[in-house]
Image 1 (tube, rainbow, N blue to C red):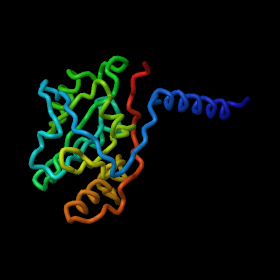
Image 2: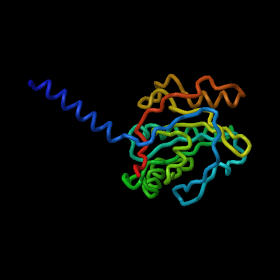
Image 3: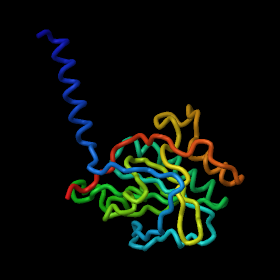
Image 4: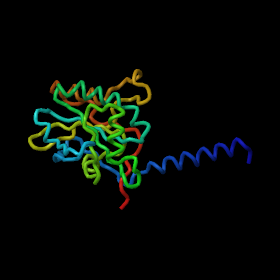
Amino acid sequence: MNITFKIKIARIVILALFAASFKTEFTPVVKINSLVNSFSLSDTNGKIISLNDFKKAKGVIVIFTCNRCPFAKLYVDRMNQLNEKYTSKGFPLIAINSTDAIDFPEENTEHMKTFARAKKFNFPYLKDSKQEVAKSLGANKTPHAFILLKSNKQWQIKYSGAIDDNGAEPLKVENNYLENAINELILGKSITVNETKSIGCSIKYKTN
């Protein structure tokens, strides 16, 4: 066995172990246009935030993220920009951390608070400790974005998937999936692309 072949085998093993470390035990099913109930979660200051608190909103941008995922970190500035741009248009942004903080303590509320302060979050950062919200929406990655449109006392999933098509290089984004969907909703149009594949680290669901 030559050295080149050994190196290739080693790389395959490393990639396999890396992929396994991001395995999620929950396989979500996204259903566009399905209704979800309002939820209430605690933010990094211990305040309970509910979807129904956004009484003047037409809808809400929900983005599942976390502290440790390198890919999720690439979107922090863009999330701040989205919240700043769309809150006044009736679509404020909230971020949710659903990753299991028992196996991954760097995802607990105290670390969330430190991370949000360091990154100057201008939106609520909520902890989904029981992971019920992530499962109800079918979230599986960080980041995984949703648009929830207000429908009486319930909320309708109108978009699920990626924020855009280039995490590493914001200036080279060609498709702003999330923004395009919001803009169409604001104009009263049907969403052209209402589902895309979210790319990032798997949400770490509890195994028991």
